[in-house]
Amino acid sequence: MQYEQRNPVPLPDIGAFESVPSPMNTVFDWEYSLKRQNLLNLYEKGKLATWNATDLDWSTDVNIEKLTADRSQNGSSDVFAQLLDPPQKLDPTQFTELNLNINSWMLSQFLHGEQGALLASAKIVQSVPWEEAKWYAANQVADEARHVEVYHRYLTEKLGRSFPVNKHLRVLLDQIVSDSRWDMTYLGMQIMVEGLALAAFGLMKVEWPDEPLIQDITTRIMGDEARHVAFGVLSLEEIYNGELTESEMSEREEFVIEATHLMRDRLLMEDVYEYMGLDPKVWVPWSVNTPFMQGFRQMLFSKIVPNLKRLGLLTPRVREEYGKLDLLRFEHLKDSSEDAEVTAPAELLEIIMKLRGEVASAART
Ligand SMILES: [Fe+2]
Ligand SMILES: [Fe+2]
Image (cartoon, rainbow, N blue to C red; front, side):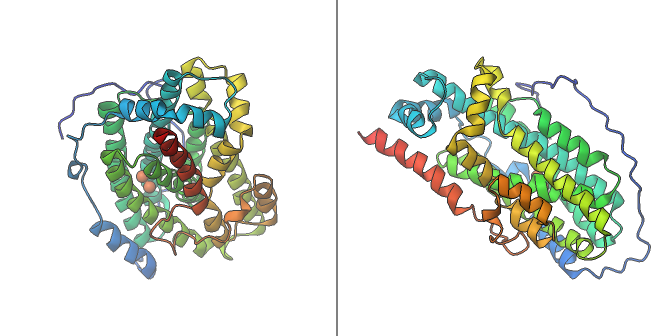
């Protein structure tokens, strides 16, 4: 691959490189028992499903400014005002800018999360004791490198604007890669971060039906991510259903709760408001309190909740927290080992379709 850097991704406050110490053991499996058929099946599936970034049509003319401005001129700024009740009136140009920035911010966090997944899955290769899990994790490493490649190229070549890693996401990724316990790497990455990403990718697809390149990218990446999350569920259920002590399980509970708060906080989008010169003291409370924004954040947990339930981690303590955040309504959805299709949650679709439907009808009048 030949690459010419265009529109580089801006650096976070801590600079270009960050070294995170990690006391993790490197574990050989000299037994090669290969007794986990479900992981071997996933490994075969992963190898067959491999695609290349060059399979995508990079000649697609992505004019996201025009798509967004058209929506804005078609009256969606009125719809925005009606549905979202923003704290300050925005003219159509500001509305377009806000949308463009939110879109590139979301995709930038996908990029940074993918780099986290690349490093976390490499750590699983190193630390998980089972040979067949190492094989699958190695397949995931290759997937994640491609995801970083593709999002980076889309952001820098096609959108031309991007954001540094969000501070809450960075704290969470640092925690995941610095923990010495291999199951915590899985729990943080495959269950929490990738679980959230699956729902967020679903949203991206519904939001941009008129942008074929991001549709193709998202469809391919979602297919890979569905396997990665299933890998987490299949691996962890073996040790979470009986192998750990009560105090070890309560450490996992604590981690789930902390990770949930960090992921929710990153979705407040204060970076976007700061970048646009909108007062975060006005806009962040709006992110927190507006029913639409609350609904949007909750939807992103729709894949995580059923997986935690399957792993026995919807304990009374986690339930109490999730009850406060109104996340328990997702507990009856299919978990990721049952739902390979990654159906977007009906409620999420409804919210987006409502917004798009309103936009379309505003455009007709
Ligand atoms: Fe990925
Ligand atoms: Fe992944």
